[in-house]
Structure formats: structure tokens, C-alpha cells
Image 1 (cartoon, one colour):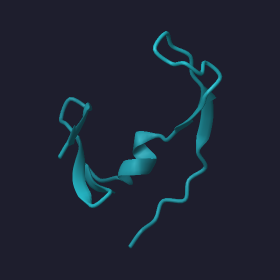
Image 2 (cartoon, rainbow, N blue to C red):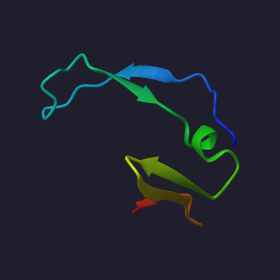
Image 3 (spheres, one colour):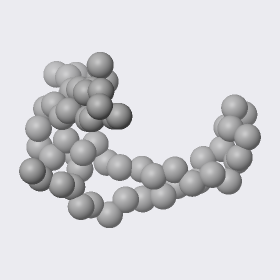
Image 4 (cartoon, rainbow, N blue to C red):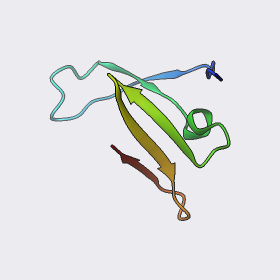
Length: 63
């Protein structure tokens, strides 16, 4: 199994809905996540989600 070991960027985010405006969020490039594939499966607490790259270069996440 291939694990991605890419350096992640941490960015500060602020929004009206966020009670902690200084909260740090990890940003991962889609290229690093997809690893030259058009689709990856993500296991979240035993449920499998598919992240797909469309022909229009958009991302779709489905359960």
C-alpha cells in the first residue's frame, strides 16, 4: 500500500461561522492526494468515500 508522505501546509482561516478565528487548518494539494490517479477511496470510520476528478477538473466526493 502506498502512503503519501508529503509535507503539508498549515494555514490560518477565519470566517463568521468559525468561533476560533486563529484555528490552523492543514492544506493538502489535490495532486498529492490523488497521486496521478483520477479516483481515490477514503476510509472514514469504516465507511468508504470516493474522491473523483472529473473531466472538467472538478472534485466530487461521494459515499
